[in-house]
Image 1 (tube, rainbow, N blue to C red):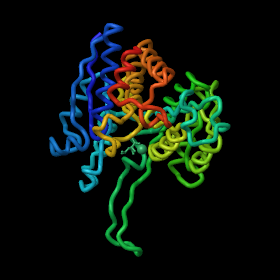
Image 2: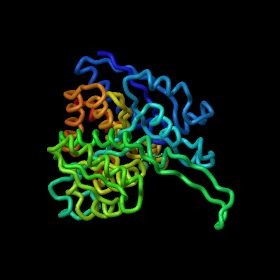
Image 3: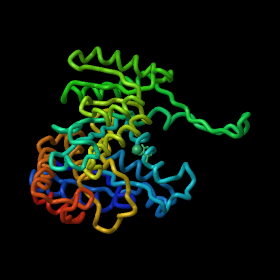
Image 4: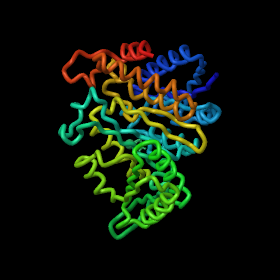
Length: 356
Ligand code: IPM
Ligand code: MG
């Protein structure tokens, strides 16, 4: 089969990690008889530099016409002076909205070989950790009405509105319950229903959807408690489903407790099979261009692309297995080396491709 992938290399370490992921994907293509065609498009800081805007219309068109999107990372200090509505990060929000990517899956797993990288005590993560945060990605306060009020008794003010429609909650809840059915059949819905009206609607709709999944256990948790429980007893979680802003925050927390953010992939899915795939980590400008970045998160993101968008489960398994072999063989990039000798970004890609 022939597949068309739109590729946003992006900024910072983005181009380096994407290059290695493509190396691995091409090896998969060779071995299993698929042809992957790459359409390179601009978004983020490099798009500001080359095209004068963070998300050119052409990028959106090409992404829409492709089977899936692979993205490295966007942003960096170079564009800190750019006005808010044109910052590189806006490109991400724009892509999510334009492509209808309402469901963001962010797994947080502790890899056996890297268990001591977690900042949590061994007894807290003993036996492994495997959580997936299902974050609503195109609604809530990040996309609500926003603005300024020139005059208030306390001086000029600004506001951002948190609003959720029932259907927005229903569809993300279904993604979470479907995911739980393939895992440990447990969903924790995180909200702030003791304070927020939008959270009370969220909680009611999630509870309604739960009735369609009698095998899945649902509990509700306030976001402040969830932030605490994630470090107190993270093993209680299987699937966490939450709003855009809470998911943004909790997924960073969850990734950090694994101790290996350089290893974590993510998928952002639309209705149907279309999706955008990117590492959880950012553009890490401090190590860009030095062959120091860990490409594994992006390589595993390509694995998610094979599994969720292209329906190539066996090929996705091959990527996961190759990463596993790489770690078992003792290879490490600097971020996960913990005192051992480390290899570079390019060598990491070479080794994992060789293990396919
Ligand atoms: C993320 C990032 C983005 C977000 C930023 C860069 C807009 O933090 O993907 O989690 O807030 O969604
Ligand atoms: Mg974030």
